[in-house]
Amino acid sequence: MERAPAPAGHAEPLLRLSGITKRFTGVLALDGVDLDVRAGELHVLFGENGAGKSTLINVISGTFPPDAGSFRFNGEEIGRLSPQRARQIGISPVFQEFSLVPSLTVEENLFLGREASSAGVLKSGAMRRRARELIDELGFDLDPGARVDDLSRAHQQMAEIAKALLGNVRLLILDEPTASLTERETGRLFELIARLKREGVGIIYVSHRMREIRALADRVTVLRDGRHIKTLDAATVTDGELVELMTGRRIDVLFPAITHAPGAMALDVENLSTADGTVAGVNFHARAGEITGIAGLVGCGKSELVRAVYGLEPIAGGRIRLHGKPYDPPSPRASLRRGAAYFPANRVAEGLALSRPIRENASMTALDLPRFARAGILKRRAERALVGPIMERLKLRPAGIERAVGNLSGGNRQKVMLGRALTRELTVFLFDEPSVGIDVGAKLEVYDFMKRLVEAGAAVVVVSSELPEVLALSNRLYVMHHGRIAAELEGPDKTETNVLASFFREQRAGAAA
Image 1: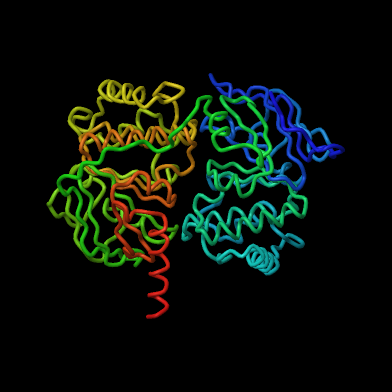
Image 2: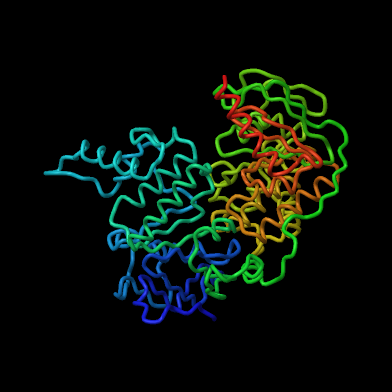
């Protein structure tokens, strides 16, 4: 395997892995992987979901012991690494799936397992002051005394980052850290990363976002099918080369050409407001045969809007019509029976039962249909007969519908959720951040899935913080800002410039008021 050369006379890397192998039942997750990370370097791990990135960072952070290979850190051979030992020697991970205890406060989570005490008595005041100092230093808008289960996902992400930086960090691991952050918060994180690099901290950064790789990376290591493919200097490699190395095939077009044929009104929302005020007086509609996009920054209310339509957020006022028929109040059960499905952004917390098999997760939206249940008794043969071909059609890899969903990569978890759309007759599809946490190859499959739905006559609503994505996919685009619709764009008006201008217009209008 090829490796970008180290500068002449460069000291031994902070981290050096050689021949790391890891097997799970029936799966070779890592196959002789080499990786080195230098002090003061940001090293991107790049690869498709299932390529081995998560397994590798779990090995580095002490969660999984490798089956073979050598592990050197700060010039010393490391054996029998545990999460606690990793933290003691300065390895600190921030995983995409949070490790916070929901019932505890932010400061309690920060010091969990490393509480400050004297003679068996906790130093609560000292821990509170240290938590406040750290959060202020990071520039996060975060209350140390708030309970984690009362925080937004963005604020939980901030708490995870603060927790990782509380100790003496030598190697920081960031797994899709900006997925839940606003532009402002992302900017603060990038400033923090630059400072840590100047201080000699090595950083392993997992991301599928090319703009972030371009802005931050010194080197990029590409993994595919559990193997190290190549390590490259970020300054000299092109986006196309990275994608080709990642997938093993040339990808010329990221977004498919979708034939939109707007037809009958499928979803009509009038003057909708949510009980918590995150959505205020919104009007929008979606027609059969087209993708309707909803764009906006994190926290603008776009996710809460589709969640309210589906029945997951309490509504304070307004009217919702599906195929011209109003229903009140909406609920997930009523929405499904009327032909509407919702695909949440947070697959772990809301979308999937990780400990249950693929079969059960894919069929759960159809269990009220007579073909699958009678008198409350599940017809498992019918369930298997339906789910098996759906997962084959969606190219779930590796195949097999009895495996626990928790063992799947992010892209394959998304396929399981998409499979639900094929288990019953549906006409309206609400996608909330459909590509978050999945790689380029998996994104292509999700986009193609939407294309097939639309061209078969369905109404598709796509909520996304990724402006290129929502611009490319949608036929009409709504822009949300502070809980309201700032603009409706279509045709030649549907441009990035006009989307951004609508944000600034709203801000100026608010300042003038």
